Image: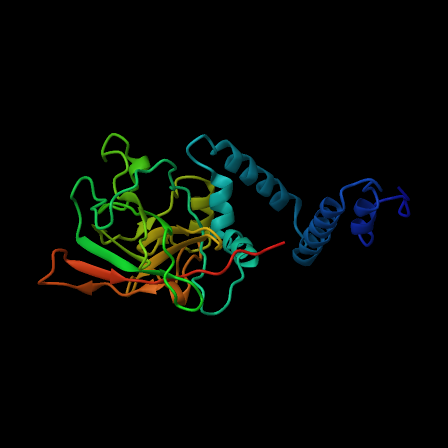
Length: 285
């Protein structure tokens, strides 16, 4: 380690910190930390952060950590509402224009959900406006992908996921896994999802209030679509016409993910939503 800055000054604050990084440090860690220090110091100098504001920031981060437990991760919520989660996802999931875009996973995915025969109803309580979800899983050329695993979940008619209401909703309510056949088609029955607020009873919710922002997410159905030899797609389909499409609290909406929900007065369900998933080949080393 070569130390070129002996003392900390306002002008040389970044160099004073970054030159302390040891020569044997992992190169990626050194790059990330040096960039973090540079941007953080630039931000503090730009806004001329006061000591009172710095103390408030420390208190906010402390309260955010204290809000976390086995069922809630307030720091992920903070990342979500600042657009960081979506930016990291976008950088790590760049795809051709024709391919289905990713969006955030969200905190309510559950492993071990039962696999159902195609066409099954995932609404265990039967509450809500029934909806048929259908479409195809295809590759970039439009050829069907057989054996694609389609993992789906949504909120209930009151805007809550089953894991949020274990004493109210039956287990795996509005969840299911389906596997496509040779035609690449999927179809299942559920309910038309509704918009709902993210948890706003903690420091992140208070921050949104101070910023004049609402905590709502537009109505959406979650999908994880996976198939051998293809990149896994983690995404939502959003209900066209929802009031919060342009102001999603976690910035998860992309134009290509907005789906039509057509009324079907003569059908077995009240609504029908058709959406095709276009998958890209898995990257090879």
